[in-house]
Image (cartoon, rainbow, N blue to C red; front, side, top):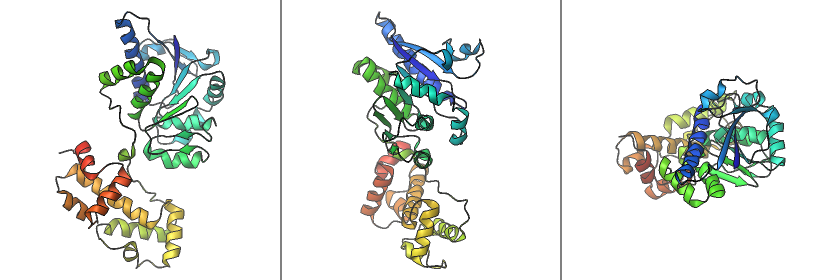
Length: 323
């Protein structure tokens, strides 16, 4: 039987724990229906003092202390239910040596969404590929510069270490692991039960451009405000920021230092974010969306949109239109 552990970290996101339990309980049920023994022995782990009645919250699954745990075959780290992942890592620092020991003993480690920050803090991901929630990628890259961040990926796996993107990407991670542990038929059966699109490989189209707005550089603030106010203009970036005092070179240098991207990239991301909103919230024709986003060349618009979002404007509307 495969020993499957799930961490109950501080500030864990209940949805990610529930999803893991639901999927692997369902797989066990597949085996029971087929007159076979369940394949996963599921245990919940906590580093804190345990309440004897705590297991009731998790459909009767046993909750054990990491201090008395046996070696697992596979351990899941859930997402954090907080935007302050730095604080979450501090509060869960006690799990780091346990995860390191489990991995050294042969356990595979899989993390959901922002759970990658805790795995990153173990140092085990250094030099390896990883992903996380698309909107947390910049913070992850800053915190763990030696990890090979693949922000567009839904799932990564290397040497028994697995990561996944935004919360629903956890299902793709679990399918990947089910195919490894149980075979393709069980993975496909699970995908059908949970209506999971098995072919999704990128999460770029779930990202939201949320630039840093609070900082101490007034010149950069002026440039940001000008771009955000006039992005619909089809003029160049030079024309948009020409009234801002300072040389183009100085503005560009300070702008990238503060925001992490160039003024041109900022303008493109602002325009594409506006286009995404128009595509899902209005019934404007594609030409109108293009013009109202600041583009005049249909070919260039499609090319930049696809490069930034990961799909065509038409495909994005078909997938997310709210009308």
